[in-house]
Length: 124
Image 1: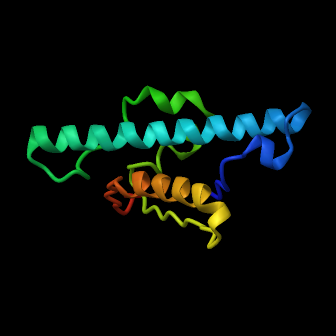
Image 2: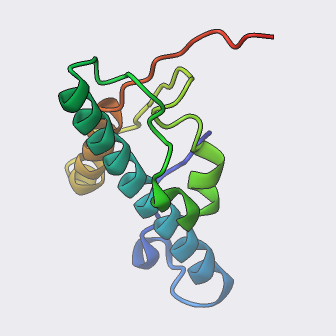
C-alpha cells in the first residue's frame, strides 16, 4: 500500500472545501495507523515477556480495538504484525527546508520497524 505522506493543509493550500476534507481524512488515517503500530508492538512485547517467547509469537493484531477506527487500518490489520512480510520505504528530501518532513517520516519508519512479523505458508 502506498500511504504517501501526511497532508500539510497550509502548504498544500487545501484549507477549504473538498481538499480540506481529504487532507484531514488522510492525516487521521495515518495517525490511527501509527497508534495501531504502537499498540501491536506493545502487545508483542508484553506477550514475549510473559511467555518468554520471541516477540513475533502469537497473532499480533488480535484484540486491538484501534483497528476499527480507520478504513486504512481495517485493510492493513492482517499486515501489521500478522502473517505477512512487510516493507516500509521512506522517501526523504535532501533539503534543509524539508528537514521536519524528513524527521517525521523517519520517526514513523522507526515505529514501523519495531513490528515483528512471523510469516508462515498458509495451509491449503
